[in-house]
Image (cartoon, rainbow, N blue to C red; front, side):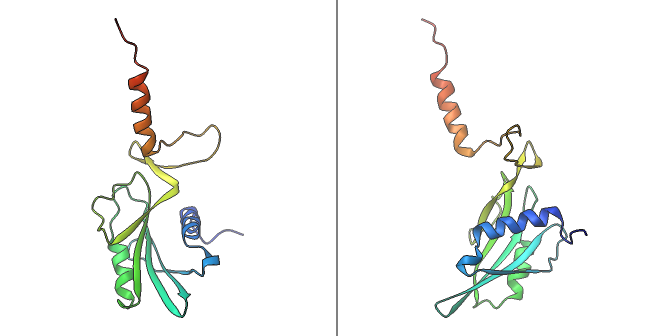
Length: 149
C-alpha cells in the first residue's frame, strides 16, 4: 500500500500539529489550494462556547506569498475569522508578508545557500545555524583575535 500524501505534506501536517495541538481542541481540514505547491487548511476549535477559526497556508517557496492564504480567508466568513497563519521554511524571505499574517518557521525545512534542505536531526547532518548564533560567533571571534604588541 502506498500513501496518498506527498512527503512534504506529511512534514507540513507535523508542523501544524506541533503548533495547533488536538488536545487544545484544534481541528483542521485541508481545503483545495489555488496554487499547486501550497497547502491550505482551515483550523477551528470551540473555547467556552465561542468558535475560533483560523486560515492557514504552508509554502515551501523562498519568497512566499499570501495569495493561497487570501483565497482561504475569502472563503470564510470575515466575522468568524480569528487569524491567518503562514508556515514557511527557516530563512525564507518574509519581508513582503503583511503584519496581520502570523509567520511560523518550520523546524524540518530551511533555506541554506538558496536551496531548500531538510534540517535533519541526525548526528552527522549539516547543521543549520540559528540567527542568534551569528551574533555569538562574531563576538567570540573578535575576542579570540591575536593581538600584536
